[in-house]
Image 1 (tube, rainbow, N blue to C red):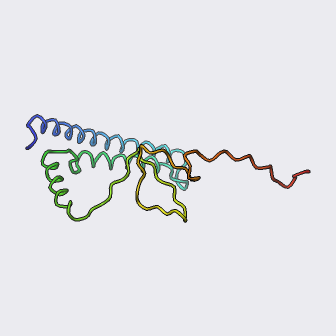
Image 2: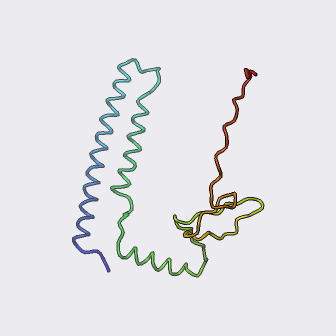
Image 3: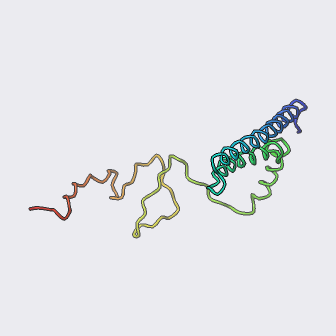
Length: 153
């Protein structure tokens, strides 16, 4: 199944608009760069720190990403790309068997050197198991006494 003419027209319109915006940005970048360099030079810039490099560099990074968006490879999901991905995944199904991650409702069991993790997850409907082995949490501990060099009796 391929994309309809209407879908292709929408994508082409978006790319042409991105290309026009990129060209406009290049002009703005050049004008701002010239203005910043002129301000630097008129402010006694020769022999001083060339600070305009930082905004020019920042705008250059923006120009790079705008250019990639306008002229770079397409990132649109088409039916052909979906079918190719499904074929790739079907071919890789027998290659390796990976365990699935536990769901958000599953609780990891406590592990201690005496009770190592076995790879099994508890039943989410079972009561929670706390490190004490009971279904009750550990009671709060009393606060520690203050410590310091000026501890008085």
